[in-house]
Length: 174
Image (cartoon, rainbow, N blue to C red; front, top):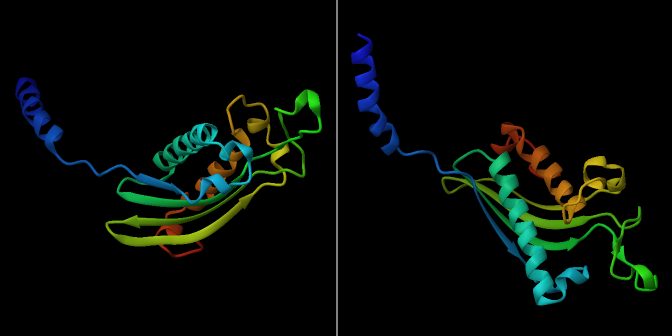
């Protein structure tokens, strides 16, 4: 009996490997005129490419974590104003981003969430966090753009955590 059960399982295993799996959530990020974004990281090609690669990776990770398989998210980033600012008059620290309460992270984008070609949600979003300095996770992080990424993470969690919102039964933006 046990031998027959093992044989049945062994024969069924290759069939499971061939069965189609639902496609993972896919995110497409487009930056609209990033050379005009507020911060100096976006003004020069080399630093802009590096900064945008960080945000690409953040969007991909957040989509993978918060969106169900089979849904696609298209994001058009319209502006990024990174947390903190450079103070060129402060000669000793002119290349250091100084975090102050008056320089919160701000991100503006449009998004469209689809599934099987059907639009589930669409909105233009303006994110900002005036209390970003009080976030201990970002404050103690050594990660590049930690405050800005936390802002996006909070939005993903709030927007896509409730499946009723995703189906269009409630507000789709922040």
